[in-house]
Length: 139
Length: 110
Image (cartoon, rainbow over all chains, first blue to last red; front, side, top):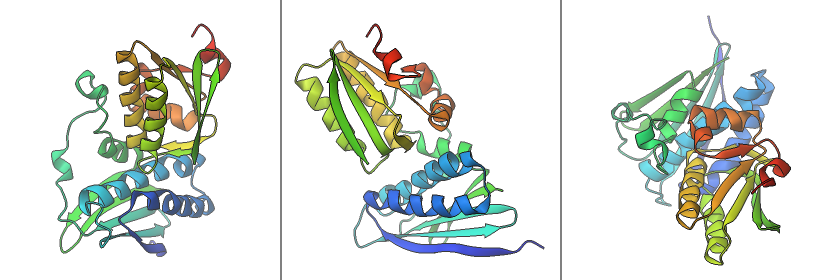
């Protein structure tokens, strides 16, 4: 049986300047979990930054009255990052374009979900009473 | 996190200290555009003191490169660590920029 615990459960205001300190906090904790150096310095910071950015900008439309919740759960086999916003969500599965193709390579936008998918082992989305993006990184 | 600009010969060298992400990308963009407006055409961004870059940060580099080229200039990058190099290769942005291992090498023949 796999045991798990909640390593972090915090709410931040819908302000993009809040992303860096919260990502630093999670990264610091990850270093205690014997994850690889790259997982702590690339995979988690970039993917989490993308998920928080989407939640603040797309989900909560940077409304200062709304918050984003981050819950980090650690088990023997994985680190799971749940990013919860107060928006109605968007269908991530509809975003299928490949930003590395010549058609998209010169564009400024459109790499966020691509990076999450490539840097995490699993990216899921739940649209229920809350909109949740779940990032899973295997240990 | 901060951006420091200095002139080396004809090249404006920008040091990115900390992260280049959604929360500060506009600051970098504006600083470079201000220099472009003043007539500068050669730009080098040095990432030796950079942690991570998110998609917004990558996007601003693409946008600046395009803008500088439109004015007849060039944007080069230097000192990507292994993680940043991986990020550029993953997104294929390594094919869009001239990336040098060191600042000195980037400045050569600029």
